[in-house]
Length: 65
Image (cartoon, rainbow, N blue to C red; front, side, top):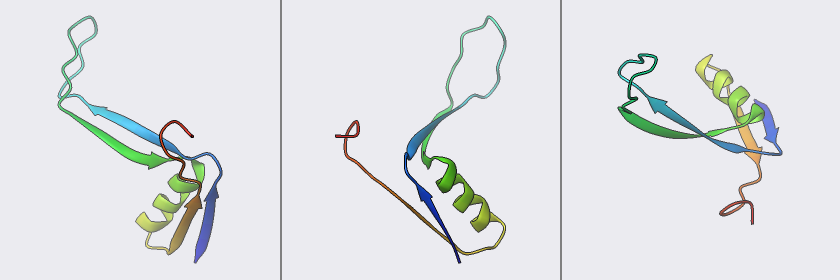
């Protein structure tokens, strides 16, 4: 098992667009929010490759308060 530590985790917001045309109005199909940060992303890749990992870090409330 690989343990990753993320000292500064983030929330990644992803907007899914059906198409993108430069200069046109952008319409969002869906929005996704996922945990992120280097250690968390590494744990995610290890899991996708069939490995075992444990992601650890800090989880403050609100805006880090």
